Length: 213
Image 1 (cartoon, rainbow, N blue to C red):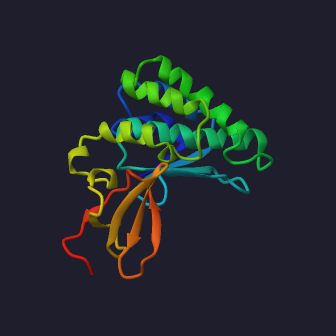
Image 2 (image 1 turned 45 degrees about the horizontal axis):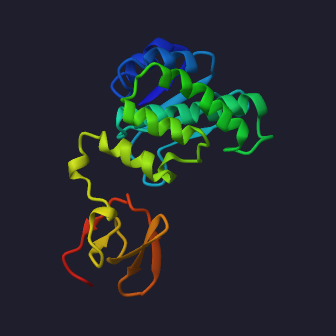
């Protein structure tokens, strides 16, 4: 789904299924001054959203994965809008996730948090994360866990931290792996067949492997 900046009312109307109740006015206020294309896209394993600056008079392009829970979708959208606003102010003179972007992200999120759109426990984790936001909220295990708990399909998701030690599992199309001990924030897992060791995020979605190959 591609949403065009010239039809801001239509953009907001089409975003309603993706964003939390009560957030539409904030999204409209963020977007309406800008020249952009917003694409709600199919799930991507490598990213939740992205921003590409417009060049030679073309509009900026924002994308957000369409499978995200509304709470997660809104946070990701604001993350990307913060990139757009930071780019328009500084162009390429600052780091993508530097203090300028962090300040913009915080500025855009604070009115949303003050309006109690998020449940208190989610709001608390987002507020903590915003004190020094990382390049992706997926890097913040506590916040990611809370957002996933809000997903209506959470009972169908099996994550690495759900498995016992020495369990054999798969990550997507990769060969089977064996879960090892946790080191700091990640589990050390051995890839069967090669013996290679990988540090895997505890909230990585996994498939239990019925046999070792």
